[in-house]
Length: 612
Ligand code: ADP
Image (tube, rainbow, N blue to C red; front, side, top):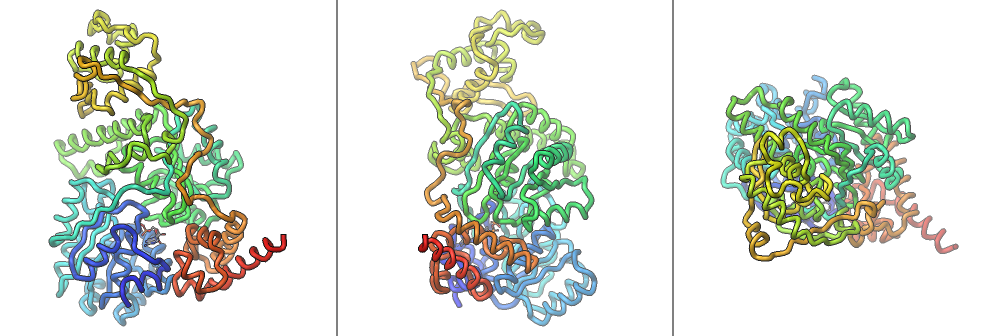
């Protein structure tokens, strides 16, 4: 079999997605790989396809037990011989799995990093051929990443101890240069083929809302997603408790997840969500890494996260199956203060760092928080903002985010801009946005008086504007290069390279503002192909999937993804051949196992339609 045949037969896909082919080619040739691909891009296929074609065993090192279990379950469902080795197994189960593995019964084995150097595991690997070691969530090796995991530092010692060095493949969704360099260095990747795919997730609709009452807004938003699965992220345990109780009281069954719950409750709530027994999960960021549920249709952030990396990763848990999904952030100013507090007081890996490094990390954290705040308040295209943040070129408007599709107007703010720039220049470019706003608005505060800023000629120059309106303008000027902002705890504003044009050469400044009162109740425009063609049939297929999944005790999306059901309801295949040919995600094993039941359901719907 070749790569494409494996892709079709086991996974039911006709072609590789962007980046996958390159990784598979490199691994099959025995070259190390560093792949940076966003959540949902399809990293697993990159090592699963080679694993089936290479001799011997592929080890997959993965940080989370739940992730391993899900992936193994999906692989077994697809007909791939796979197993996992972690602390969820009893001693007898572990021994049994190792015996099977030594007898060559598995092609893919998932293992926790902490197991690698145990005597038992080492004795096992000495007896078999390990062709490939795939390191999932490879950023866990770096203390600069968000999820540093000391166990990952043992990987090199493990591979170095093998008789024959296997090919190494590292996968992550975190793209910063420091983390990338750490991965290559600490995992000792040899001249790796570096594959970085685009960060754009076309099926995701991004939106930011700044409501007066977040709870009311949340209730309104949920009406967009009847019966759909979704996650509501909160920044603290207390907020999780509060929002979860609120939703349950309001008749929206929701489960909760945070580090303060017992292991049993977390496990139970997570499974209730995975198995679609409860539609909404309210959680802190402790929930998610490794949650493979592909039919999450919305991720709502009740609080703003601390940086865009976290936001992108958490929001990215929506729509992994490629079907349309929405990522909505509810923002207010308190979010910034909470995050600042968390940065100051809640150091995750802080104890392991020396004072100087800790200060540097803190400075970077504050800068990232500032960018996150910009995202939450920008009037520009949200997709463009995210892609730009990750250094990716993209059009200025996507026409498929909350800001692009909300009614907006262009306003000439040249005179206001000149006043702002003048004020910053004349006060010596040494103050931050809030003090500058106070001066421009002519506020009579102690700080303004102490610094004698009320004597400035620009004092009160924008007294007709509200605080928010001045801040909006300052932000616009920051984003358009007229202003710069220093790093650090107390960022100060200074003139940017584009400022002289506006101050001295008559360049006008046009600001686009969203008419908030007209912000849409639901996204007006989705990308083409996002509508469900036969919703009634789709619902029936979903119900059938649920029944089958319950019988087999697997999550529904393991049977077929939402994207596959959408394709079935669109193409309405009537034969097995058509099913495999037209519908993505139906591999040989699943076709044999479930094909007929789904074909019957489609056939029944079709005949009812014909009789109307
Ligand atoms: P990641 O680990 O990058 O977050 P996954 O490996 O979980 O992403 O894949 C996300 C989804 O995309 C899964 O539902 C997977 O089956 C699907 N997928 C992966 N590769 C392809 C492909 N070539 N064609 C269609 N769907 C794919």
